[in-house]
Length: 203
Image (cartoon, rainbow, N blue to C red):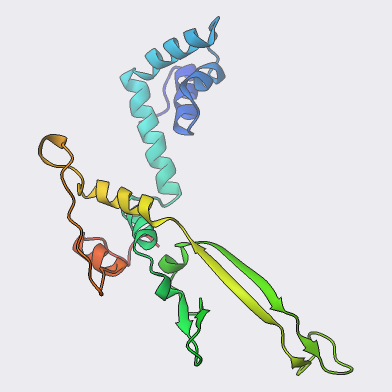
């Protein structure tokens, strides 16, 4: 679909596609109304025109393509967050203590991390005549505490559940959800395989 012949309609559609509100889009397109309420009413009426809605849809699809956004990619990102497990980000050292280990993370696992933070909990002691950065400079090296924070799981799981209709019964009514607990919960890969999402596409 080519640009709309009405230049103000085209400008209006472009602003809507960018995420601007109907009122702001109406004003940016060059329309004027005496009150905010009038702008909202007239802008909503303009937005209902089939030509404009089709143009907005086209512009949004084009924008998504340029950003390489697809439903499949969004679902993979949500699955990475929803099925993230803290055991994927730590290892147990020889003394039985958990240590953060991010060296083997996949891109999907890394996407589940919202924040990392490092704190020095014990300053190091330098050898005589040495300065930090010199080879073999520490008499006793500093100790650090590394903390990671994951994105909230529940919102991601709700979005995934809504996509597959887990919460909709017949007639659109909410149906009871059964929960099953296992010492081997479903992994991100298992969920993606069950729902036909190819992990090799969209990166």
